[in-house]
Length: 244
Image (cartoon, rainbow, N blue to C red; front, side):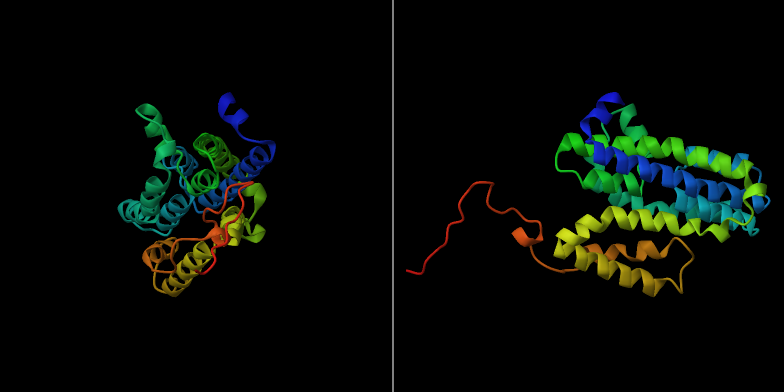
């Protein structure tokens, strides 16, 4: 872990630490909501350790608390976590091999993948992924435990608006890519339109899956230098072709 931490610069370490802390705060809301819904604390705490996927855990707890069957709740959680399939394709090179790959798959989440994909070298990709993934592995269960124990003191968690923190964190993480790459912006906009259109018809957590087909839409060719594509190397003169 020390070598991973040394690979990252100070600003990136701070960004990862803040995101992990924010996830811990959202975990407090999740723990408090679970206990206030009448569930024993061991259930959300076990889910936070073994599932480690906030959206599917919240969906599972919501269905069970509303009287739904655990099987239906588990199926809903699996559908929400289907987004991890493209995550694995995009960031599979940072997971390692053997037992380490199993652990790497377990700590895969939206934040760790976004941090990894935002780095320019394989070493930084790997370090950012593991630093964020392991940080959330610690902060999410601790936040769930704290929220479950303090649920009666916190009152109604909805009053704090903590449910908005998670998407706000993700938006902050992807803003650099949206700013620098026009093709990424078009794909993100198309995905947002698809997700919003599906929201009235799908349960919470599933509209994001409806956005995945946007990845297949022909929204532009290969990016040029202005869109994040390769341009002239530093110090290399730009050659202008003249008509002959």
